[in-house]
Amino acid sequence: MKQKLPLLLDCPRAAEFCDKVEYHEMDWTGKLQLRLHLLFCADCRGYWKRNRKLTQLLQKADLHTCTEQEKRQWQQQLQQAKSQESAP
Amino acid sequence: MGGLGLIRNLTQGRPCNMKTHTIDPDQWVDKYSDYLFNYTITRVRDRETANDLVAETFLAGLRSMKNFKGESTERTWLVSILKRKIIDHYRRINSAKGKAEVQFTYRDQEEGDRLEEQIADLSGRNAQQLMENEELGKAIMDCLEQLNQRQAAIFKMKTLEDADTETVCNEFGITPSNLWVIIHRTRTALAKCLEKTWF
Ligand SMILES: [Zn+2]
Ligand SMILES: [Zn+2]
Image (cartoon, rainbow over all chains, first blue to last red; front, side, top):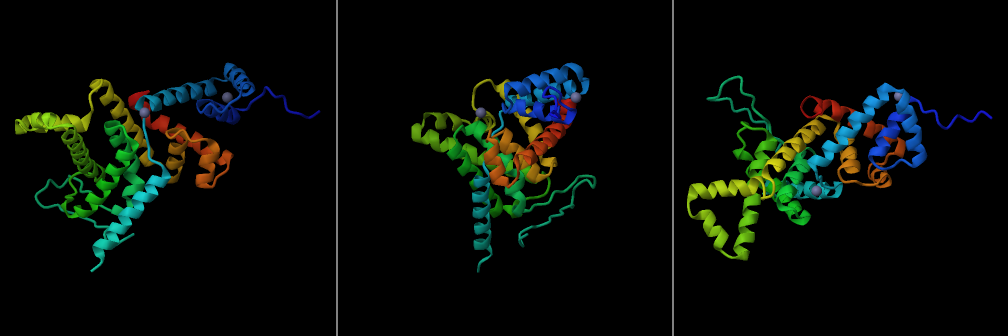
């Protein structure tokens, strides 16, 4: 009966849960555990708030990045153009 | 690193406290493609076109490297090339749609320049809001540029491209717990970097 109490999160784990919530990768039991932890832990509440704000800023900026594949393609084109330029 | 990694140090006729910047095309894609791509897609709103314009910009940059004076940063210089590419793109569209808008643009050279500048800088909509968001986007990109490149790439793919955990892990050869550690570090660093101005 050494099973850990499921409701007790430590702070690093709580922070991880905070992050996962921002990516919608937390189920309701996890959210409940987190909620309880936040009730008693001001540090993690601070992190939670900052993290929420960061997500809002990221959404507001509406950034679009290119894929790794697009980058590889551009890199190839550049290298090709370079070698053509240096060829006699 | 190729032989084209020029280091220019043109200090003649310039105040000595002015920093000169170096140019190295081997690093362009890693360092600037996200920034340039985002700049483009907010203006042309089509992924395919944005992709072409960024590719053209890199190639044009390579061809005109000797014009780089080191007065601005590499990124600013590349953006100025990109701006012209975007203007050209709109000219092509306009001339395909009919000459009216283009003629208006060229009626008076000065006014023409101003209009073109507007096209390149924002395409209609709520200009004020767009500019503020762009300012924010720029700040975020600047913060990300200061981080470890790989770490930033992982964060971007997960956060900005909204890729699922498995896809990111496969692309970078990491485990989910690696991923969440990196996400946590990056979010903490990013919040700290943006704190002063944006929080
Ligand atoms: Zn805590
Ligand atoms: Zn969008």
